[in-house]
Image 1 (cartoon, one colour):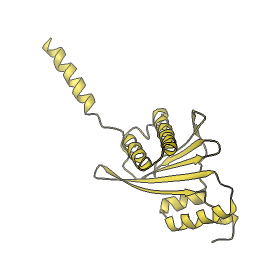
Image 2 (tube, helix red, strand yellow; image 1 turned 60 degrees about the vertical axis):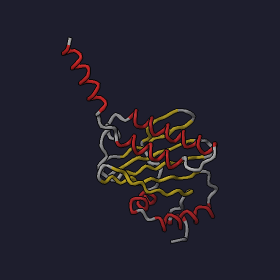
Image 3 (cartoon, rainbow, N blue to C red; image 1 turned 180 degrees about the vertical axis):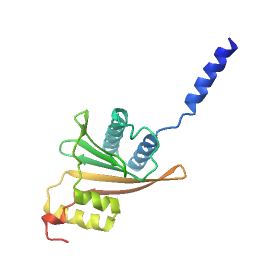
Image 4 (cartoon, rainbow, N blue to C red; image 1 turned 60 degrees about the horizontal axis):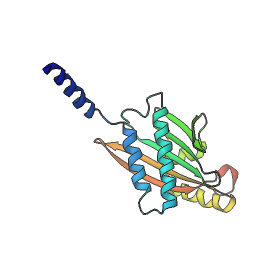
Length: 178
């Protein structure tokens, strides 16, 4: 009988000490940032973005999001206000994941929501050029899509989040602003 209590206590204690998936920590930090000083309409959007990240976590059969993320991880979320749809890209140097969440339906997509040009700017964290490209896009595009990019850097088991929000960028291949 004592052994049974010992094993039960050991199981309970060890399950409480299990490491939490880094992505869940990142997702919680993103949500906390998203909901600072927001009105109820934007909080609903943040709730749906968090829900789509959690669905990506639960559906991830590659285990990319389920363990430790020891590299800089990027979380790019796109929201289209016209269709109320979310698109996400999550990646680091070893893994990539693309997903969509449209009308309460989650699915993994095979193509990224960002162009190669946009991806390069984000990897370089070139916020000056991103802002220039955004200004060009606002002049030339009828835009209903907003981007939220989070760069998550892990150091000493803590995450530092750097963020930028922008509306659609215009690739210089398609306009004269270089």
